[in-house]
Amino acid sequence: MNEPLWAWIAIIAGLLLVLAIDLWIVDRGEAREFSMRQASYWVTFYVTLAVLFGVVLWMTVGGDKAGEFFAGYITEYSLSVDNLFVFLIIMSRFAVPRIYQHKVLLVGILLALVMRGIFIALGAAALERFSWLFYVFGAFLVYTAVNLVRDHLKGEDEEFNENIMLRWVRRAFPTTDGFVDSKVTVKIDGKRMVTPMLIVMVAIGTTDLLFALDSIPAIFGLTKDAFIVFSANAFALMGLRQLYFLLGGLLQRLVYISYGLAFILGFIGVKLVLEALHASDVSWAPAIPIWVSLSVIGATIVITTAASLIRARMDARKGEETQPEQV
Image 1 (cartoon, rainbow, N blue to C red):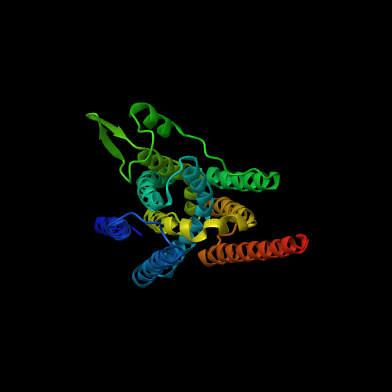
Image 2 (cartoon, rainbow, N blue to C red):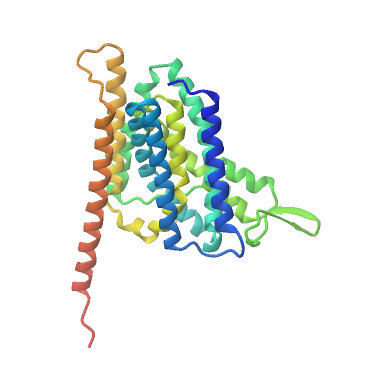
């Protein structure tokens, strides 16, 4: 599937238009807190957009490419749940007022999308030239899956550490002590200064790129088409902001989601290695069809989410039973 230039222009222009409308609708007038109802509407809207995009692919280029998109989209959206934990830590660390959090996420994720686009382009070019990288990607995903399970069993929480770019921004630009409404820069005594708003946006964007180190190889394990990879990432990131507000405290209740994500990463890693062997004419190595991948990913997410919610409900009931009766 060799996409013409107009297809790339269309998808990028469409994404920018939707994001601009999103920002204008939410941020027009006085800043206000993003409600759960708004979040649910926007999550539904962005998921619907992704489904419609997949349907268009189905009608224009066939079911295989549409299946690759849906598998990649579900994988990227699911792996983004880990991002949300760190986003919560960043928001808390910088004490971002809730009325400004949507704008922070919007600009931060837009920055992440640009960097992911560059990462995807480099990855696609490298994989096309060096086929042995599929073995490296596969092994890396299996290694990441094992580490994810190990860290979860140890009870190690996600942490946020300032990266090189964020430290450079802090050193290079004079920063105000506190937020100045939702402005990213202000002029004080004739001197231009950045606000913590810009610092948080950079933190969100660059931290997301670190998560892309496993999610991008994962989606390349499902499709080699750079257009599909970029589209799936874009739609997943676009809906990530609203998912942040919709899930909220629910994140702490998804106790088994890490196991599900680890299983998905491990499955895709093994799939990558098997398909690389299959492409090298190794007789015993099968080529796993996309419908199998889509079924495994979808079933894993449903099962781990349902199990997490059941566990949370059982823990809540157990907590109620152990509370002493008030006299």
